[in-house]
Length: 144
Figure (cartoon, rainbow, N blue to C red):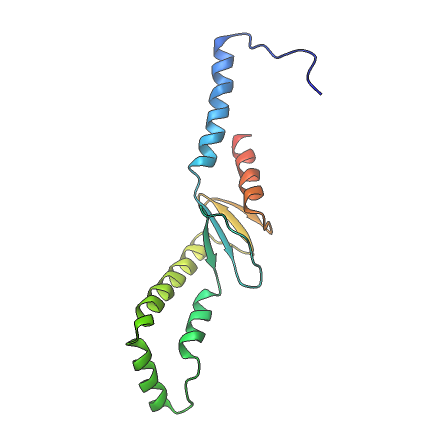
């Protein structure tokens, strides 16, 4: 239902103030850095602009790297050295370094539960699996 009367600003100053608030809200969302911190037990669909931090990724990669190693230590060392020379080894090492950096970043902002949506390393919404809804809640809070 349309309002019976349109709103009219009493002065240019109040109009400019209102427009400034609208623009600030849009800029807040446009320049926000968003992270999703979770694990494989709490999957979250992440939009392309969002950094996904999986807390159990390092463990998964280490398990993949040590998969199928024999109990004999010497044989295991030999096989591991061969694996580290393979074409996939550099990619795996980069992925492992990224997983470790992700853990450090998550710990640095003191996230206590998953899933967590973090905006600008400051604002956190816990338990929300809809990233856009969490970003919207944070944007509303920031402009209030």
